[in-house]
Image (cartoon, rainbow, N blue to C red; front, side, top):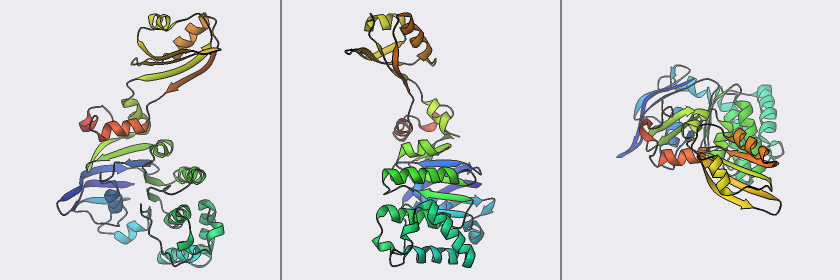
Length: 320
């Protein structure tokens, strides 16, 4: 468990982090989001013990990181955004060095190396010099060093940075698997990635927490408008007929194709109208060829929060 109390970080006159308090429970995969300069990387560096706070306290499993830095750092695996590596070493030499620093040697090191090299997809690169690796493989090596000592807490700052689409899918799958028995804080600019992986979302804006809620609650809290796209076989119906029958919808598109009709409509009703639409079209002897319900995305939530529309708890439930 991670507990943060009144955390602040200042760089001269710049207040990067402003009095943040939060608790991250064991087993949570938490997405930590914010625009550039919001203070998220500064916060993550403090939690990892990489930087010191200007004020406030951080506890890892109830141990103060300032008072017990060695004990708390053993519990954390950290992948920084810039992923510093020793470029003159081979991958094997680097991971061996990381393990020796952590007191992992001999047969224990060999077993962990075999496991992690397989998980991170670097088996064939162990004898390659790090300076010759692609950006994607360097990122894999950085992830390997973060998890090779099997820490209960992982702090991952842009973990899929530089990876190709196939590698991103593999690393996402690995993070989900790790999240079954680890506490993970994940920072990423790829919001679809956070939405796919994380259980809880924290959005930091201008050094303060602007939103903090379980992912589903956060998305639901700003779900003001349903968008429904449907396609059905040609029948005798007009756009006005649809609006007359459903006065609470706004038709954004009504187009008669060669063999079908395509409709995109919106409603502010909190009721799911898909069943009513289906029932109405069936009464007209129309066959539904496609029906899609478009939910609010994390990208829209993030945009609203960081431009100030949802700050100060204006939407109930997104800030704790």
